[in-house]
Length: 227
Image (cartoon, rainbow, N blue to C red; front, top):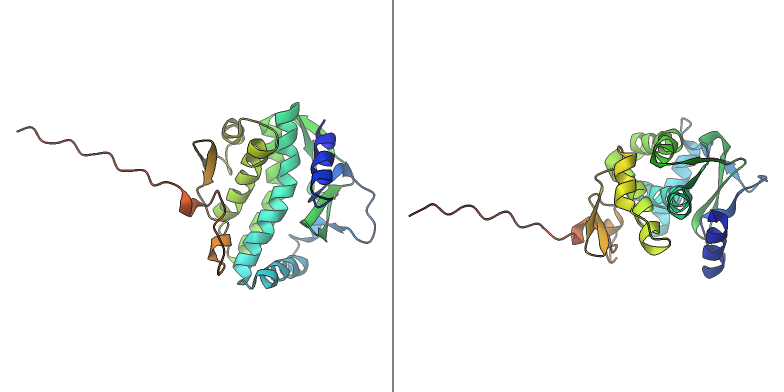
């Protein structure tokens, strides 16, 4: 069910999608192991961050945050969709995951995918496969880990509001740290509680979920003293 949904997404986007619809590949020279990214001295990760920064004429830390927003979205999306569709969550372990630069920013796939169920499986996958990259980006570009995890939290919320209906707030809560509490539902949509840093670029419109657009809660009126 998940791979069919991903294939429909790919067809609707003219093939521009950041994850292989079948998830599993036999990598050739165009694919690079993701495990190379958090390996010191972070040579490949620096290149990707600087390439993203150059594309948007942005400082390195903004390029780093935007690179992660893209990578984190496509790595997280299959897990969120699988959970919402039939409860089967695809797990792409760090050592078995590959990527290549593409029209979607990056495209991700794995040499092997295991299947699990439940929010805990997603949380474990985030710890195993995303935390090393989050920590490396934080060390290299000084982007706060909470900011980066906010993009992962949105990568759970967005597909469950725009592709397959799902209770993303329940999923985030069940996963717990590091993604719970970083998304706030408002009306029919949601807002982030952290910024992806896109808004810091010149002459851009904020993302629809940007925290700068989040309605400010009015402080409760103080009780009037009795006369």
